[in-house]
Image (cartoon, rainbow, N blue to C red; front, side, top):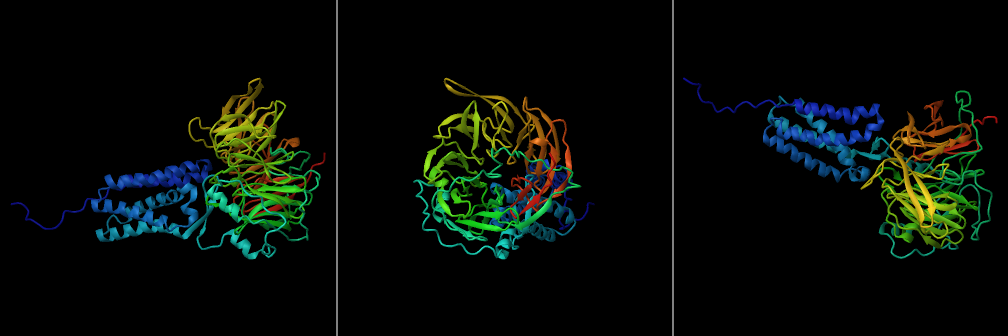
Length: 621
């Protein structure tokens, strides 16, 4: 006789866990462990980590042996949890990485938590398993509603904080007693009317622009008349007198164990990625303070504020945070600035009084790019030239009226660059499509070179008059990654442009490079590198500094590096090998992308939270 019939259900087949466990272990290693030891693979790990989530879903749907009700139920809960949480997380996470930050963060964590749940509950009753499954998915997504981010570093590490905790900017505004409320607009300095057809995002900023300057430490009178010419500045603006990051006439002691940098002062500052302009005992920078975009003047010796000019404008994006991106430019007793939304100011350097104010976005019709307007003004003769994205516009330095508009050339974040090539003065600009050159007198195009990229760093010049352009990311046909040397010629039919070489040995992103003795030195990812300008061959690569910045002291064959972690370092600018000649010195806390400035023996450094001055011991000549 056979066995008697029974109504008991057949025993559930055990889950096939090993494929999910293998995927989860690999996901954890690639996404979280490997980047700790190889920072340059951080972005690759992010992409692979994002792909790990779908792989785990495929395992669960087709290879797990789970009941179909659990397979489809888990997928449904995941979709609902991601959709609901996306609308509840802080704006910094929801909009980060061009809208991809939340899935990049949430999907790998949810996938790992889901596999851990499957292993831990494999022998529990079905009801318990299903309840804990939903709870695990919801909690692994919901945890992101408790956090915010202050942005990410060059290797995609985030500055997480509790959502309810005050930001560094909020702490500054709560404690800074040297910052009285701004006065009403100055009637004697009206803003000229903007050109028609403004870009929607920029026009709002233009209408809200409120020129106002406030003396902080010294009384001052507004000066409406054009300023008299003054002696040249110690460091007139972005990357120095020639925008090449080269410091001449200064030699420092390199034995920092015996003669380390001495801190003169340190103070908090509003967010922004501006560098400094320096003249005498005053320096100038840009920062954000609440809803006001601020141009600030401080004393070099003490860091005390002298005056602040305010515009009612605020630029913010989640990847880098709030604040202006450009650096002030000093010329003829005036401070020239461009803010994150396109506001261009000419201010009296002594008082901060407004000489004139425009909005480059409204004047050119340029759309506000994702990272904001990042150009630093270039003063050429009687013109102030700025780039609103990839759109060049030149203003009359005395009155602020537009004098010419350059060719529209797409988006970009670099600054206009004055150069003399084959005896012809011209203004270069790197943008998302490549490089262009125009005449300073009328903005007419001289030549262009197509090489689509990120359009951020400044171009470089070789001793022979060739142009160096660099990019770390490219888009579209002919996209560029690396550095390219372009040779220029001038004939009866105009300019000719010819590529001499392209190398991936140096891939600058938003970290500018310097040129010295036939070689270029800059950042290839998070590591410093040197390439030979004859053929683009990389000579060495070494030293991890994150997405840092540097200046060159040519008389000593020396690079002064400010790392992304806020450390100072000295590196030999020689092609033989990478040599760090001094122990690293901590200078700042937090992510540091701003360019350092060396004016005489004073080193100025800042980031989005603090700034500091250091005195460097000078070497005897």
